[in-house]
Image (cartoon, rainbow, N blue to C red):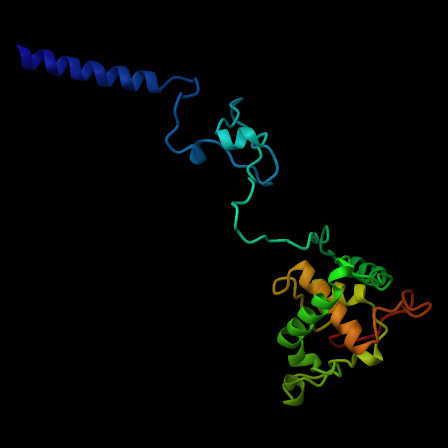
Length: 225
């Protein structure tokens, strides 16, 4: 008799548990909240569930008004300590690229802090020699070891080009002709440092573009910075 009562109690208990878990209301506790609550695509955007009116109640997110991008842990490495943000969008076609390149030639100053220019140029030199000199040469003459070996040709001499710090940065970001983008190898601040070094070492400083140069048609058929 006792065994039957125990069996009936167990069955009723499981049945009650199953029935209560099938309700349409929000559960009082979620074991894996990241699996239940949506995560915003934008780390600073409030996460919203398109299928219910349930707000994300995880305390850390509530404190940040629902944003999933939380404050970095103390001691972690900053990803953008320069405060230089990426360009809005990469050019989608040749016309957009050419318009952006022409506009970049009017940029004659780096957005980095001028007080750190000495350190920026020093780092720019290291990055240039590590990333660019294989083709462009340590002297900026387009005669790097890859070119000297005969494996690649057509790299221009900086002395022969009307460039600005802005146009060098633009080409590093978007590429030009046979040269691909280096946005994946260099962060925004470091691309500006390399650009500053190129202008300082090979063009005598960050000078303004020559008159009418921005409007002149570009006929280059080889890689250039």
